[in-house]
Image 1 (tube, one colour):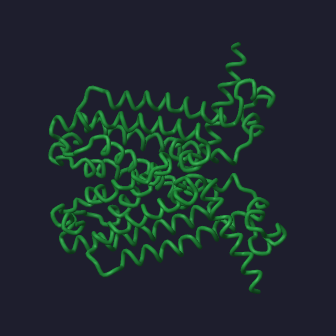
Image 2 (cartoon, rainbow over the protein chains, first blue to last red):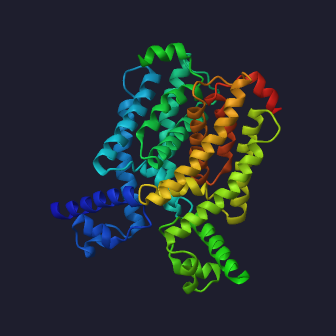
Image 3 (spheres, each protein chain N blue to C red):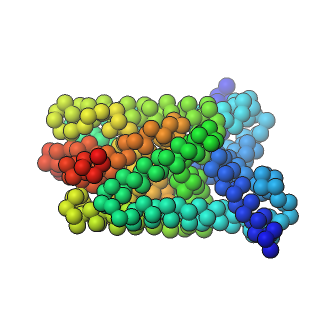
Length: 206
Length: 206
């Protein structure tokens, strides 16, 4: 049993790296197994298809990212400073990835949304659930900030969606220009999108 | 000659549709030629590789989109209402695409940025040029609005990049949820990102 779960994990890890570097369609099962050092025959013991593998990669990555987001967004600090920390950690994560593989590979959820969401319903649904949860998590923080009078937004859900959209858009630029500095604009843009009281937030950010 | 240029155009049109629907990596030259109704042998008469074809598709699409953007952004109207018109036309274009093929296929430039920009330098460079020009065109309008005291931004180039990033992020959501209503937030978000004087822009928008 130890050995089989090891093989599954190896396939997941290899698939995650390969999907980040080259997308989904460009990959074949044989290549993934070769990178994982696992015989091709064992692939279908763990996954019924390449699509099932992609869903498992999304789940595993989201489980880790969700717990990172929860750690940051639910910590005991002012709401806006938690949001700021989320952007800082996202930037740091992309920078670390760039240093290790030479290129900004972006957000695997955004990548697969643009590559695949109009082609496979199971992947579209999973990605919708993931982004719904991201928006919900940001929404909660914005609602807290609004209760404290720090932001002036009508619909906090809509505002949260705009903040996540801005994040995805700037990550797209970071990938395009292979430059994580584009993400530095996120905090300021977030304050603008939330009509935040700059005096308060200047204090938060110092 | 009439016949050969017709074949080139057919390949470009078929490739554009297929890339929008299924991305780049999933496609083969044979499939593109079949969809174009052109013998596979003639493909390499016009394009030295699939990558060369993708670059030609990007160029052709950008030529058309650039002229649309110029028409809207350089017309004789108040700068902010021109920007608003750009979002409205983008939304209308995506809605028309959704009606004709059943699904929002998004922005081909954004799609290929996330699918390919970290893999092929020629495509990365071309996409950088395209987004640079988009940002430049938006920048000019923001600078005009700033001169009129309608927006309060420090760095107009940075602000333009954030507006385009927001556009790409919301188009990503429109594709993910197969719903162009997400784009309705663009105008309000643009005003926020530009710290626009809402009283002026309310007048513009009415």
